[in-house]
Length: 143
Image (cartoon, rainbow, N blue to C red; front, side, top):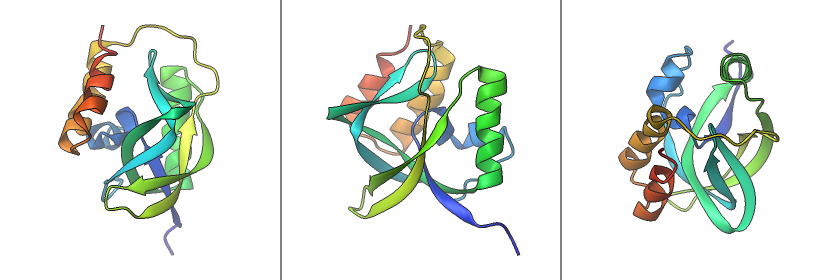
């Protein structure tokens, strides 16, 4: 029997299927979604910070716990950032609410983002039809 999958909300470069395929994860269908109560920062990696004035756009996907462990071990060991899971409730763009895991980095030393990293987020943001104001918010992190 295949291992069970859980819903996860990806908001940074992990909403890019090419990035996920690069670490041998096939997320299947990616569903555009919105998470209220957070703002995005990219300093140098994408991360979410709590905010009662903002919302973040990303995608919901399904993954096994093994795949998520592998993905976030890559973030820790290769990228140098530790992301931890937190349960959230996201709005799919069709209005459906979905519980999901969302990975946040509790301590990230602020540094400028690299242009190619921001581009790996911008492409999917445009492809999934996120609002223009949000795409411009992401673009604003380019050096």
